[in-house]
Image 1 (cartoon, protein in one colour):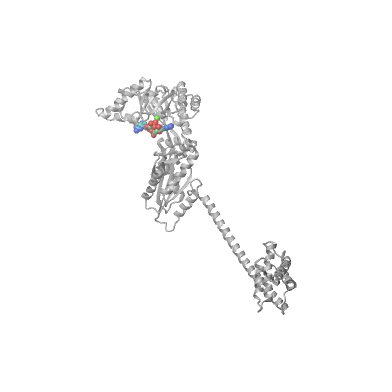
Image 2: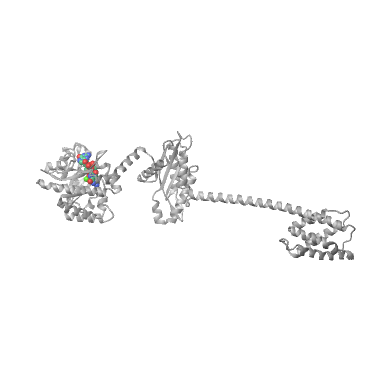
Length: 587
Ligand code: C2E
Ligand code: CA
């Protein structure tokens, strides 16, 4: 369809104007469009302006719209407006060949409208921009705050949880325990702890590797968490876990938790294709909150855990204040041994070992005593056991050996045949390298003949897996030192085994001898006597002499003599006493 000639001309001409306009404004601000797009835009606005100039009646609104659109398309600077006003004023009417009566007047008012629309749009846009900047700032701030909070939370989580099991760690546990103990209105409230440790976990680690060990720990942690829902379960490190039981009504509540924990741990776990069965030991403490501290509770639970371990594991034990007090006292006593040695608080009593054949004094057993500055004279039973456990028996036993050799050497000066001195040796002393040199050195220094020293060792000392103790004792026996097996009958009582050992004497435990107190007509007493009799004859067949311990009555002594027992020791022959009393007997 053919267009009217005037219209064709009218459209081609604004093209020139629009291009001139585009040239004028480009560069006045950053425009996110191509030159072509800009020209097309300005072409449309040119058409609008031209139409407005000629419109009847004259209307300013298109001028506002043009101003607004310019800003909307980012021609939005003072410069851009200035150039626009200039190019429209100078060229629009001329370039488009517009004809109207009051064109100049209309042009002025239209441009004013463009400027107003432009300014308003610019103001709105600035406000919008400010608003969006404000919003962006706010958003950024909230995000930053959240990120900070998140990272703080993450950091706190890391600081208070164990990475392997994700259970609370010692830090969080201590916090929670402290908080539980400081709760307001705490007066009559009670709290409980289960201190749990896996039994023989080290074996898993050593035999299957740490990775399997770690997985097992994670599995155990998982089960504890599920089984003890509602109670704080923490991992203190290694295979140690602890459960905080708040608001208890008595020990039963914590025992129930411990039972649940043992059951949870006890289920076999499949780890890396290995079906692993583990057990645990638990120390339970439950008490009133008032007057206790986290440290007290943890120490109590820890000691109790050790009782559970010592009793064989796979169980819980309940804290017992009296037992704890006894153990602490025992521990304090053993810790005081080195200082007591230095202050010379130990001394030896001697107890006769008497021949049952002729009543001669054959030897004496050295028995250590402790003249404690506060507790008075202490018998060995109250400190030897723990000294053996802690290893303090080595210096203490060394002192006994030296003191016994020193005193015994002096007895030969009193004429007659001086008795040998029999010294108890703890397992640790025998297993320690250097025993041979120690004894040899003592004999040399004191001048005590080797035959006048007897060493009393227990059967278990000899049942060792290593050959070393036996070799050492053999060297000593070759020197002439007597070796006696102490408390025979309370351990393995393996006579055949003794055949290969450098032993000279058996000391039969007092329990066997005790049966001989009763009249010989009693069947039990006769049985004991028969056992003893066969023991004696077996010992004699192995070239061993037999000394009966714990002989308290003349009747016992007589019956022992009758079955061929060589010697006796006990109250009937004399109580342990200081060396000078022994001297009276040989003098
Ligand atoms: P043991 O080797 O069995 O020593 C004999 C214990 O029985 C002594 O107790 C002694 O006083 C006691 N006793 C003696 N005769 C009778 C009796 O007729 N009836 C009764 N019921 N008991 C009697 P003590 O002196 O208290 O020694 C206890 C244990 O301490 C000893 O038992 C010994 O195993 C250990 N011991 C003593 N001194 C030492 C030492 O220097 N080193 C080591 N390693 N252990 C020692
Ligand atoms: Ca003994």
